[in-house]
Length: 390
Ligand code: GDP
Ligand code: MN
Image (cartoon, rainbow, N blue to C red; front, side):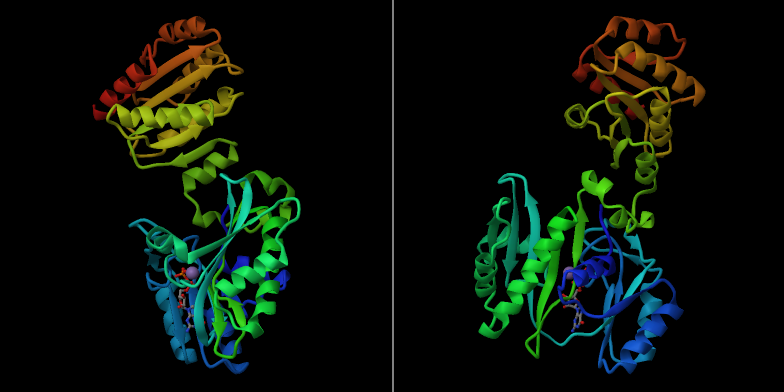
C-alpha cells in the first residue's frame, strides 16, 4: 500500500525525524491559507508540491519553490488538477488532487537514505548515498559503488555503529553525526513499527545552517500486515489507484491490470504468473494478472468476470485452473452460471487439470455455451491468442 508524501512526513514527525512544516491542501483557498501562514511565520520561501503516488514530480513540473503569496497561489493553480507525467506514472500521467504547501528549505547538500526489505538476504537493508535528489535507480545502475549499505540483523536491530558508518560515508560534518544517528534510528523504528517494505528519503538534505531534514519521503506498507494497522489503513487514497484494482480488492481478488488483450482467470499466484508467461510465449499479451484464490465460488467467479469484462482492451478470456482445493467440476459449474448470467460474448478458452477434471469438461460441453478447451497449457494459450486476434 502506498501513501502520500505529506502522510509519510506525518509519520516521520511522530518518530522524531525532522521534516519541514507544512499543510495538505485540496483547494486553492486551502493552499492560499497555508502559504499565507508560512510566509507570515517568517519563511522566505514556500514550496508547492503535487501529491501523487509517484516519484519524479520535480522533473515533471510538480514541485515549485515560490517567494511570494501571489506566486504560491499561481503555482497552486497550475499544479492542482494538472495531469502530472513523470517517469513513474506512464505517459497518461496522474491527476493531481492534493497539494502539500511547505516551508522552503535552504539546501546545502542533497543526499539519499533508503530502507528496504531485502528478500535475498531476508534482512532490512539501510542504504545511503551522496547522490541524492536525482533518480536513485540511475545511480544504482551506473555507479552502484556510490550506494552504501548496512544489513540489519533482525535479532538485534539497527545498531548505532551502523548509523555512524553510514553518516561518515555520507561525508557529514562531525557536528552532524549525532543528529544523523538519531535521524536514521528514528527512520528504522518507523519502518519496523509500520511494517513498511520501503522507505525512501530523497533528498535527505543538510541545510545551510547545518541541520538535517527529510525533504521528501516515500513509504510503502506491506499489504499483508495492514490488518494490524487500522490507523494506517485509513491513509489509503483510492483516487490514486486503478479503479478496477480498487473494485477487485473489495472482493478479495488479487488483480493487477496490464495493457494486453487476453484476460486471465487463474487460481494461484504461481500459476497466474506461468499463464502470463505462456501467453507471451504464444505471441499474445495478458490484459491482467488475476488470482481468484483457492476457494473461489460462483459469486467470486462472477465478480472476476465483471472486472475482466469492464476492461475495454479485453478480446478473449483465458481460464487456467488447476483443481486442487477448488474442484474442477465446481469451477466449471460456476463459470457456466456466471457466463450465462452476465451474458459473456467474448471467446472463453479454458485449460483445466486436476480433481474431477472429466466431470468439469462434461459440464462445459453440455452447457450450450461455446467454450474452447485446450488439452495443454500451450494449446490453450495458442487458442486464446488466436481468439484475441479475432
Ligand atoms: P520528487 O521529484 O517527486 O522526488 O520530489 P521531491 O520532493 O524530491 O522534490 C524534487 C526536488 O525539488 C528536490 O530534489 C529539491 O531539489 C527541490 N526542492 C524540494 N523542496 C525544496 C525546498 O524547500 N527548497 C529548495 N530550494 N528546493 C526544493
Ligand atoms: Mn524525491
